[in-house]
Length: 222
Image (tube, rainbow, N blue to C red):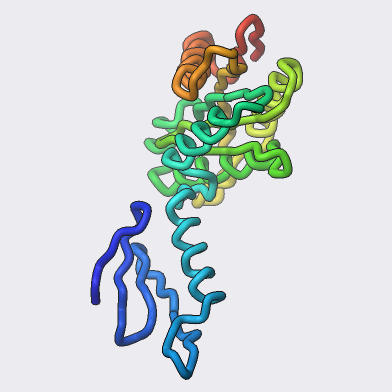
């Protein structure tokens, strides 16, 4: 068995069993061999590479994109000279520590998974919008080619979708959850880092002025 690392995903190459073990123990077989050359069939190899790529860019707990991919995604958008409007929404689950205290880490994980799925419901995959978990209870949504009004309305829809549909906890109870969000629209002078930092600052304005609200430059609601 030989251990390799590919895009931060550790794999064990098993030559005797004709496959690889991913870092969570999942086995991916290379049994699709050409009987004459012994080479791995291309379709099978591509499938395994696709699996590795997915593991590298996805957040394992929630099924949304990871922080690593957020950085790559933003760099790719900003490197496009023809980029249009970019909106970044920084999102935080309100009072998340109390959820972990009351329901344990399994309950906290249930909240994060549910919030992530509801965020995904409000983005347009056809326009390359993205949902990312940066860590802990912090998420980011990136929207492309939306007006300021539509960006704010999307953030408000996210807030309401989370607030008015309680999370089913592992013990069978339901828990009402709210989120706070900061909405920043890209300026010509922005970099990926400056745009994210502005959204993060607006998010903390929302949290420091009552939570369960959206703050966008010049607009706030709750």
